[in-house]
Image (cartoon, rainbow, N blue to C red; front, side):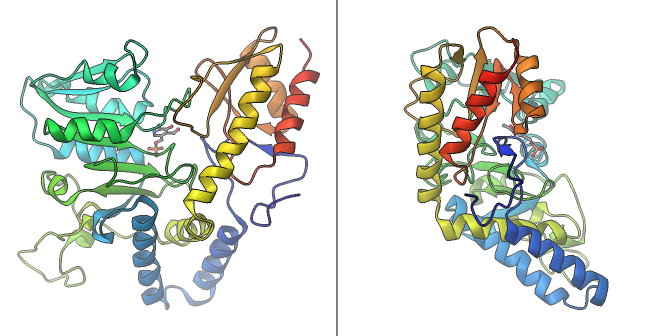
Length: 375
Ligand SMILES: Cc1ncc(COP(=O)(O)O)c(C=O)c1O
């Protein structure tokens, strides 16, 4: 039985939410209606669109428990938001940044590029200490200005104790930046509980949105420490006063949105996030964890499969990575995709990332397909 919001093809098993998720039915409808409206009326209803933009910031505020919608900027993607932080802060030669050595390139390249300014990027081996957090803390010294990590690692599903890291950073006045793309929409994520200065995520994974529109949270003090790196009309305080000279910067996070908003993406993401909020993140998380527990158990009991994700995870995520003892990862991946089990080849093996609406029966079917894969 399909979830009514996910009319995916019957013969398809979609376990790739850690890459790009399918759209819920309400998102398909919102986009179709927006297209129809554009074709028939152009932008005659622009005031409604502006209301939708405001509504999306409020929805995202609720989703990450930000103190105010003013703390939310709508950005192109995670990489853009990370670059806003990397190029917004004032660095001194000799400063360092602490991260892990498992980060997705989006959370490595911007920081690495600061080497030109004499800033060092320290990449912890998360398995080199008693806990992954301890491995990060071990690299921190007096010159550490910022700690940046993915809350959930894309290639293993390892989930960090971000509340513990946030606490550590606050005590030492180190800025804390979180690439939350593998968390928001999958698990409960609270920017206040983890004391994040900056957190960002694109909408196309666990939030079920389209690619190209993401959320960028900035705590007010931290926000004021970022100098601006992009400029345009939309970031003015007096936004629609185009004769406004000299202009003042918008006090809210909107200062990071330099020009015309991605209205198509806004209509889509707002519909997608409404599903998360209506269902409730507590329920979504618990349904996802039930599925993940079952998936892990099936993999662990399977004589030919080896789970490569950290176990037993005190902190659960929506990502499980495994390999077959007799079939090479690329061959198994090809076979699964051919059999319409949509998944990814990442890190040490095959990555399955189901979401709350997937059924346990689909897990059984995917495992049965693996058993039919020619060795
Ligand atoms: C941890 C992590 N960060 C960032 C991204 C993608 O970033 P962007 O939103 O810039 O495409 C991914 C996508 O796979 C990811 O897994």
